Amino acid sequence: MIKTVLITGCSTGLGNTTARKFAHEGWNVVATMRKPDHSLTAEYPERIFVTELDVTNVTSISSAIEAGIERFGQIDAVVNNAGVSILSVLETTPMNAIRGVFETNVFGTINVIQAITPYFRGQDGGTIVNITSNLGFTSNPLLTIYTATKHAIEGLSESLAYELESQNISVKLVEPGAMRTTSFASNTMSASQDASFPQSYKPYFDHMMQSMMNYPFDNADENQVADQIYTAVSDESDQLRFLAGPDAEETARLRWTTSEETYMTTIRELMGQTAWRNRQGN
Image 1 (cartoon, rainbow, N blue to C red):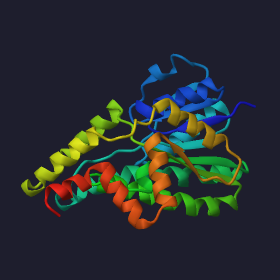
Image 2 (image 1 turned 90 degrees about the vertical axis):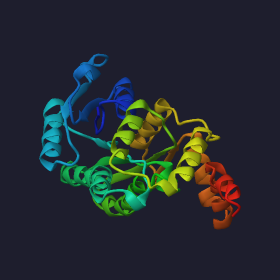
Image 3 (image 1 turned 180 degrees about the horizontal axis):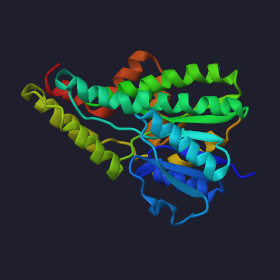
Image 4 (image 1 turned 135 degrees about the horizontal axis):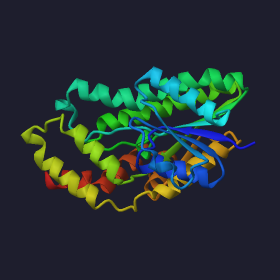
């Protein structure tokens, strides 16, 4: 029987690429987004079904799950891909902006998991894949809120992997490195407009933004990340984390195989923090 995956955040970027990846591999795809764009179905009209889903609206989630089951007969896997970011200084980031990022990235993911779990339990199995980031196990300045949400999903997913194993439901994490997609960048900048930067941070902000532009690793490729998502969904082992991208692989190596001092020193160098400290004479 042909398997079916439901993916959130499919309008553009990684979600869009992942939907087409699964369809290419012969899966049925329930491609969900807040504002349905049916052009995604053009390449695989029989395999891709586009429907509305807003991860912050539980009624919307239930309706999308029901529509997907009605279309394809069942759902075998869910990929929680929908997410937003914000570039800001924590000191002056409005609490409503912080809550907005958490609503999508953390509570939205939990909403989808809570909605699909009874269904998976009823059919005696299923797979949940949560998309985090290498910022789920490392950190960057100016992305404090986004990083906090990804750390939250990392902890949630590992705990949930043990918990849902009792219900024959598998949980996986895919951790991409930096992907400078146009859609993600525009969403980040849009959200960032809600946060002001105190003048005292401006030299540091300018320095760090330049350092980000000179980041020494290649970006994670959307197609490679989609391949890892497909691998994670198909995996039947106990492996939880699936890295995607050269910077994710390097930061994971530093995080898990070196001392804390070595890790912190190296990360400071890689992201330009050391150069900033030297510039300030620290």
